[in-house]
Image 1: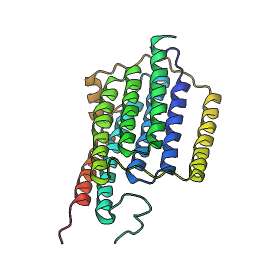
Image 2: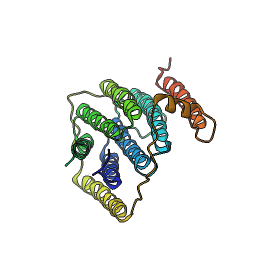
Image 3: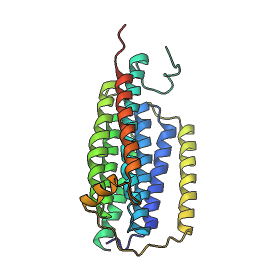
Length: 105
Length: 169
């Protein structure tokens, strides 16, 4: 069912997505877009896990379950990050990384 | 070219193009919608690999939950019509250089390595199998990470309520 698309293709796709995420992480200034880049990075790791599981150890389920756990961790991370971002917006009236340069105002 | 190959190239192209757009778009709401397309294409890849449960979780949690959360917080914190100021070319060039060098190094290593495909029969992925594996404490069970993740989710929920709460003065 997966003939014609070797494992390496999936891994290359994951790599490209990961480094696009890195690029966004380095260039963006808005906190929410940085969070979106982190989501891209986590998602690329998920693709790698799933492809490894399917191609190398199809009788096991480790990759499948750890992808589930990573999705849960990403959800928790997004929730906490957005709470922090909203709090920063309330205190500084902006969510640019340069404006938020004090811990307590 | 078989149908499966065609689908892989389609999803791959969607993922690459829309993730580039998601990190370069100067309108924040558009970037969030591009991210949504990337996540949906990823769930398409999971469907292609026959992991239906995982694809459904990806669709509901990532594409449904996280993107909606991000869009809501965008609406709460920024003006939709405002555009980001363009990035300094120097910063953009050096970041792109770092990313491209890293990607090329990784891809060269990947192409060098000879992965040996496993030829065991694929495990069947019934919902009952998944549920039993998650709750089993035997050799193939995942009860410990499951419990850890539930405590993490509870802690994250409480933390986000406490952090986002308005402080009375």
